[in-house]
Amino acid sequence: MVPPALPGGAFGPAALPAGMAGVPGIYMIINCQGPTPATHNRYIGISNNIGNRFTPRMSVVTELGFLAATMGSIYVVWGSVKVRNHPLAPWVLTTNTANNYPPPAQIPFPNWGGGGWTAAVPAGGGAAFTAVVDGNVINLEHLLIRFAMTRMGAGGTVSNNMLMVPFPHPMALGAVGAQPLIVKFRSAGFGPYPPFTRADTLTPGFVW
Image: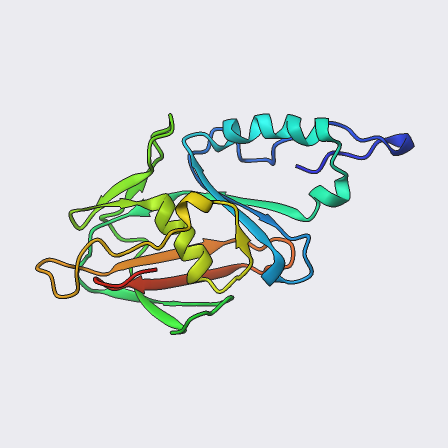
């Protein structure tokens, strides 16, 4: 998204990153202008077309005259979401690489390459991004925001003020049919952050 520098100190229009147009799913904007992860800010969002969501933002970048150096420390990662009901074994141990907070270092996770997964696609039009998991309606955007800010150990701040409220497991501990919610997040490297994988478990009756 960095506007290209032009002769004489001017710069051209900002443009979408390659591969963003037409993609549905989730995205995260990370402003790394602060000196440490504890000073970085994140905005986490959803769209049924991430390219369309970002296109008007490009004109704002251009019109407000953000310098290339400023935009160069703001990163965007985006990707897809899959969900499934709680499956039987076998499971695979997921090793948490970067930002290992809190422990444990490994989390059993259903086989990503196995069957039973369903792609979750935002509906658009301002509708909540939800999916039914183990019979419960889960707000995936809310879950992702709380996971990113409380379970990945990245620190910093978040601009999604409305959805930073605690996310409780929808069922009580010991309730009939209650299963844990297990979340796995994988990211490519960007800026000061190396590629990482993080998984964690939200037990019935507990809150993220």
